Image (cartoon, rainbow, N blue to C red; front, side, top):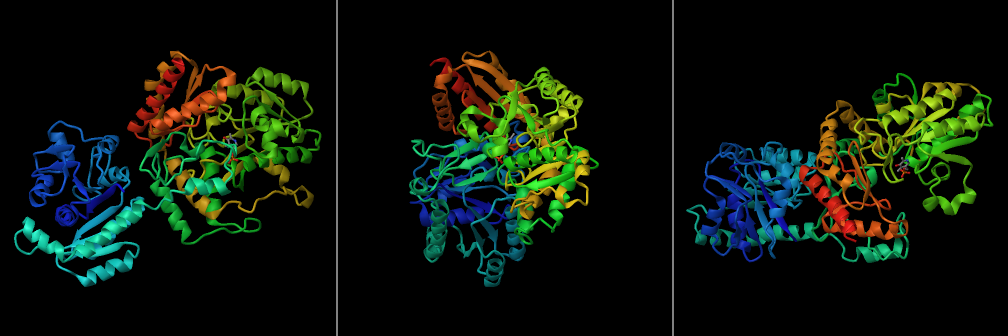
Length: 639
Ligand SMILES: *Cc1c(COP(=O)(O)O)cnc(C)c1O
């Protein structure tokens, strides 16, 4: 239990009155902290009227009684950053009552409103409002606004004379909230008058305590044990001694654990989360969609979210014609592309073109077609006897030219992860190389398939990685980021030249493929919002900031001891360590452990440690990731 945050609908809502009353009742159980104060400090008032309470010093105090941002500007100072605030949380044995200033939508620093800062503290929020005329509207308005920003409230306290009608109405429209009234002494406030006023209302206030306990202690300490009984995790040995992280909740770039620890999600939860966890506009789109949709079949039926998202996808590619074939994960998007390419050749009268060319170090998913083309010996070696024939060549246009010449009449298509080969260790190649590979493919007249399952959505600095080479693939696979990482959705985007081969009344030429969950309406609704945000382009500023942060702060890794190579492409930064092969598995674990100690979740790929954070990641968090990469480097250099 770490406490709660006291918010007011506005400046004079009664936050300090509430704090006074609450601490008068429970000073033995709670400490008080107001991180930023201006004018006559509330902390002083609490100390004077509730002398038994522990009041922690504010982080910053300005004499001038104006908004903190204005006071800071006038004093030539900078308000504490989000990370500084969190780091400054008083380390007490008792939970904290944290008082804020103004309303949640008042300015905090130059770039944030107050609620955005509070979100990073991740504690239950109590809204204090005056019971004077207008309480219903004020309260409901603030509650809806906070909900829409993923900052839900836990309780509402109406300070002032009892108003049963207002309480009834607020309860009606906010049924999930605890709503109560708090009456303050009618004569002068002294320690004694406060004691008296509170004595009669202690049972009511105690409900807030229960709420706080409930909100903070929802996790089951036996979760890992229960997990061990019933779960089989991906890529994990059943005899693995490493416990999985029990995750309690997620928010922005953070993963919260039940013990109060907070990890920075440095790899966007397996490259899915694009803007940040529970990105408010996307969660809002989900809430709106949920009022109308669950799932509906997609064979012989259609719906607005699917059509609109397909339009947005094609628009983002500047494909005036072409089609979107939906499925539900990256591997199936790849299977669809392989099957479409082969069937297209069948329709063209060349069914002998059964060979696909892939690249060494590539990864395209875990289903059979994707394994056959990815062919990683560690992951898929076991299944080798069951895989179909493909060819793997180095990422080089010369090698491709040679392979296509040797197998000229056999090849159906070439499959590549443009610019960055993700699971293969964040291996990167230049847009020039990509363009050369594309041109060779064109010259030989076979299909070019871009697997943008990881790169799609701006990770590499452009919305689609292949854009940087100025090329136009025949098929594009996309999945992880389509719905911002919130729900599973995949698309295989097909060029008009292939579409045309299927536009025939001959039913035997139908593409017989489909999944139960094709074009899930909820996922498509989020994806529409996501893609319209991406097309507006604000993400470029954030992604550009991450990239320039890496360039400024990480490049010295390139020459550091124990480092074989350092690579950057857009928001992705990767360090390849110079560690002996046999040691690989152990090194990965050790690095992961070092990062966890620093509060950062990274998952090394063998001897490659990389970061690929969501776009919302703050400078503080980027600094922490940077610190981790250097600590890992030093630990290997000293080994
Ligand atoms: C993750 C990934 C896939 C597979 O996607 P899943 O949704 O995990 O099946 C395919 N291709 C690339 C490039 C990927 O990164």
